[in-house]
Image (cartoon, rainbow, N blue to C red; front, side, top):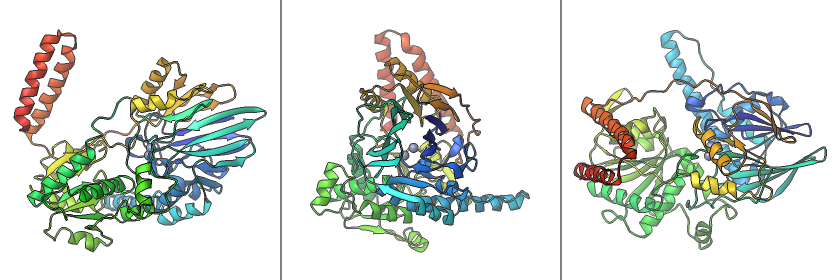
Length: 533
Ligand SMILES: [Zn+2]
Ligand SMILES: [Zn+2]
């Protein structure tokens, strides 16, 4: 009875864990490695034809994006997940394949010019479609007899529609162990979906730690702020451009916008129009409208029961063709445009940015995490101009950020979730899916609470019968930091530098007396009020 760490070890992407029990090899998740975490996607640390089954916690690509590659390399077993995750996987894996193909084309155009060799896409749409024939689905709470001595249950993780924690009862040579894989744990009070389920106990827990070092702030004003931003932008006669992830985040926004419209909170233009300009978002929204009664939180359940469509309202339009998408930019009526991708790295959003960034009456609103080196981050950091489609575009639009609606549990909630495991108490918690410094830090926080825990490294092997590490893993080298693509003015660079010096000065004054600390804070407050007015 062994546990292998095949991905998301001291990093946040490429989730993949392997269980060996009664001669069966079972994977939990098979995610794509993205950004700086990338080890080498095509090289699995195991032989794909030898895998008997994959259990998938949820549809996000960092948990599922290597399934097509697994099948391409000879996997012929079973893939088991919830019904809704399977529906979402069908569209998300296909979308991921299109991105892989585009990416390879782009690299090959560059390679041609520099005389380098051609690259093949990681996988194609055909490979993504081939995954679906291996899929079996289940519902939350159903106990599945997977193999002799292997029982599986999918439990709501409250992170994305259909997302799960996976609880397993394993029996081998008379020894019985219960293990829970957290998947990604959701934030509380998210619209549409439920809060994550808490467990009574387990011998082992493999848990995520994305926000293991911090708490969320400002969750409550999210919807109200959104209403104000729409109102102000419509009043200026501009467009509101929201780069949003197609699955989950887009539906959440639509849910709030319906409420805002119903309450007529946008006084300047109560009949404002909203466009979903992303074919993936449109298809995902269809799935969110399906048979979901076992998947919704109470508010959403009551709405649907009462005959309200969660994501339908007057003035909602969807665009399908690229032509329709382009026409949005020739029509002068102020409107809200939700478009992918969330970090502005690819897709239709870049066209909307090109046509709206230079217009001072428009707003670009970020609603999700913007990774280092992405165009989204560059804009948020105050770039004065950015390059889009070979053209330098001035940034005159208002750039705003609505943080706080994370789909991940924060530090306090992660701690609450894990300390609820009491009968039995975990013999070991394996902390995964956290940044290089965050995962070991969170494991230490658990140790401080008397919970045995560590942050495994890539390829670690652990014996679940004797509760001992059989083989330590290693930390793969990281890719160099990607630099931003924007240009900043020299005075702005100087201002950023001064900000850093200020921060250091604040840290240095930690030991000072309370009176001078309060005076320092008051003076800073005055300065900020002057500049933000
Ligand atoms: Zn996720
Ligand atoms: Zn994840």
